[in-house]
Length: 417
Ligand SMILES: Cc1cc2nc3c(=O)[nH]c(=O)nc-3n(C[C@H](O)[C@H](O)[C@H](O)COP(=O)(O)OP(=O)(O)OC[C@H]3O[C@@H](n4cnc5c(N)ncnc54)[C@H](O)[C@@H]3O)c2cc1C
Image 1 (cartoon, rainbow, N blue to C red):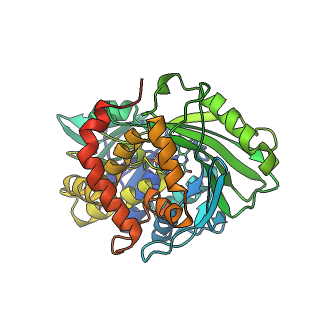
Image 2: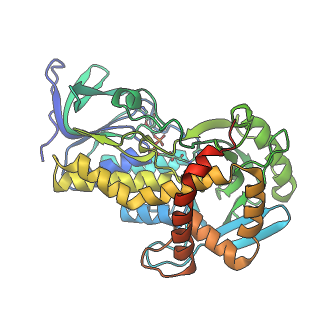
């Protein structure tokens, strides 16, 4: 591995092993892992240090496991013991499942602080981070040979695209989301609440839009333990009327539902919305890989993306260390083996619950008994232990097979309009 050459002469390209575009959780994880293994890494983010990503700030046990793998201390995060699922009048408080693979607790960690902890760890490991610097891939034919960033020209053996929901970089590389696959939209703000130190994430599964149509998605109260709660709602593009869905109204109507039980104060900031990409046309090519949201790695069943960003970032770095030239193609295979079947099942499931009547009866079943609700939590959180022969693994397997058979029908009969 080479040490970064930082030529003052801007006409001569600088050289690093890895250039990372985007300093969110995915880019930071890749930078930490690669720099600790001795690679020279340069990270670029167009936002300033301390930028706030629109997010629910919720970390499942899977995400806590990934942070543990990166040796990130969680002292600054709020400990979460489980999930409270609410569907109409049914309320179930469920502990996170015990598995051999993941810790049995989650966390809420406001993104401003989580992302700073991650990128600080990358800098400590030796990665050089440039803020307020937009970077774009440099192409030589189909091969990405590095980046341009402001007036810098960087040569890199691998360029890691960690740019979040697809934008200009994805367009340049043909890595936008797949047009007829589902995606999500979500909105959030913060408010003060005396219940800010609650130990459960809360999810309300029975939201309705302005026309009274059940919304595939959920409203959340994620207690941050710092006097505030993160309140938000998210919806899947598979519902009828998605294009005219007003997220601000949906959030207000959800606020009405939780206002009293959480003694909510006024919004501390204007609610902000953002996209949840759930597919990508490409996630690698010669000289580059895409990770996290840029690779469409968001769980369609719960909107979780932080863990997938961390895991895919670490994976890309590990494979580069093993073999720089083989890393892109091997990454695509490895990330696919780890996530594709689950994410495909999740996307098919999201077509299914786009139909209000299926959503209503599915929900009745999902929270109907404590045992089934526990399975729902484990399956939807992608917390099924691959070695486990338990009920959750069987449900996931069955869902995988039956939804695969139903796939053409699901797409033909999609509810969205
Ligand atoms: C409302 C909402 C709630 C959510 N709640 C949760 C939750 O509770 N838990 C969870 O796990 N996930 C949640 N998600 C998803 C989660 O926020 C994302 O999956 C996660 O941020 C992905 O991380 P990332 O590093 O891939 O991308 P990002 O965090 O989006 O980071 C991308 C970075 O790239 C930078 N960038 C982009 N283009 C360039 C460029 N050309 N040059 C330089 N820099 C560039 C951006 O400035 C940004 O800092 C939520 C999403 C939304 C919208």
